[in-house]
Length: 142
Image (cartoon, rainbow, N blue to C red; front, side):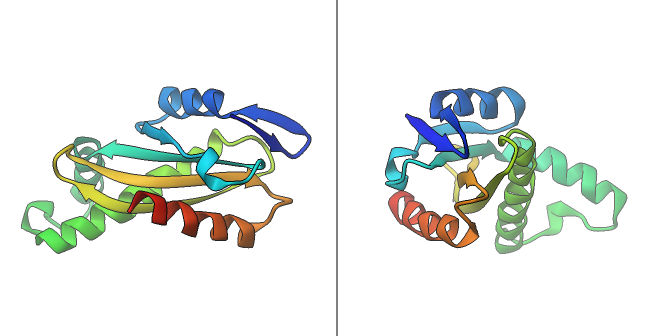
């Protein structure tokens, strides 16, 4: 689907390819059409627990927290926040003058990954409109 991004037109298929080639995320679904706007890109993403474990082990090796001693709830919180933190690196891929909103919403134990939704638009559209669209997208995946 083609999206107006400032004075440019972006194909959501191209953005999907960029995300998959330049990050640890897999695009589960292109949700751009579900945003019901012609100026926003949206994707349902997943990131493997193995990738998050590797990152956490690197981070925790520097500290004195043992991830093996975390409760399931604490581990869930760590996975969700780390997935969102890693997804924020996707700002590097977003076209110039773009803004994004990221929400991790599920630990899918059957696929052994964390599911997220990311929405992006041109900064002229604004944070408020982006948040409104994110609310709609989250209800579509839950």
